[in-house]
Length: 285
Ligand SMILES: Cc1cc2nc3c(=O)[nH]c(=O)nc-3n(C[C@H](O)[C@H](O)[C@H](O)COP(=O)(O)OP(=O)(O)OC[C@H]3O[C@@H](n4cnc5c(N)ncnc54)[C@H](O)[C@@H]3O)c2cc1C
Image 1: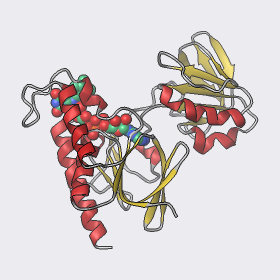
Image 2 (image 1 turned 60 degrees about the vertical axis):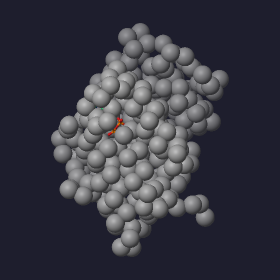
Image 3 (image 1 turned 30 degrees about the vertical axis):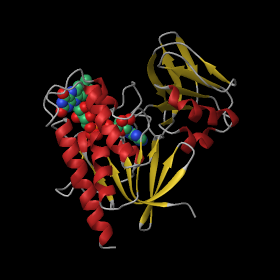
Image 4 (image 1 turned 90 degrees about the horizontal axis):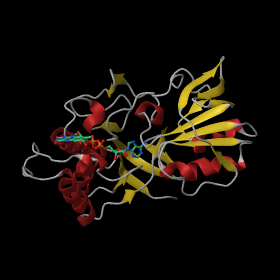
């Protein structure tokens, strides 16, 4: 049987890293899942002047200090995007593109929720639009599909479709394609709209259109409501109580994903609160 984490944490920003060190300090078996770069947002910040103890620091310096803390405690970072979490009795299965992990509690610290960006994307979600090639690829067996991807990290996931689908058109919204299966056709163009009737039928680009049955939109951030069924939002943020519990049993949320202020101090504080409450709940089981 595969190992079971006490707490799985989605996202290695300040909220997720804070949750991890606090759970680890209480002797819990934790892992952080990160689909992109660790502490990326802080790394971007030219200066951080409102985080206690770092009055003259650049974002890169603060990011480095956070990452070093995680490394010192030897907290495992699983460098994969989480695409789905399935409740399984008193545990949950955390699915990345390719692997499954088991955890007793989950902390969502996945940052600001990205809204659907392409015209038609929200309308056709589940009707031809998918955020996960490994989860939904088989639905399009023998059919033509398009993959719209914002990072080379997703090429492995797109390659999964090569054995399943007929024609696969790939739009890379980043500089250079790195390791794509040769059966996948890279096409150029700006996506304008996803169209169809009851189901998706075509994607319109600025240079022509493609008839397809499915569109996989692979972004570094998947909306958490797609990752976990039954997760309630309040406006554009995850709804939580004072213990940072979400509407789904055993799932906590912390940081930018729970609402304003979108700041490091609040993310770090909430990461701690979520972790300590998850630890408390574990001790009662
Ligand atoms: C340019 C800039 C400057 C800023 N300056 C300041 C400042 O000076 N002071 C301040 O307090 N705040 C500042 N902020 C805001 C601050 O960076 C955020 O409030 C903070 O990073 C939020 O932390 P978080 O952990 O909630 O989310 P994030 O830092 O956004 O981390 C979320 C992580 O989750 C990962 N993720 C998402 N979905 C998945 C998934 N499905 N599977 C795996 N991983 C996933 C993402 O890749 C990301 O790494 C700044 C932000 C920017 C962009």
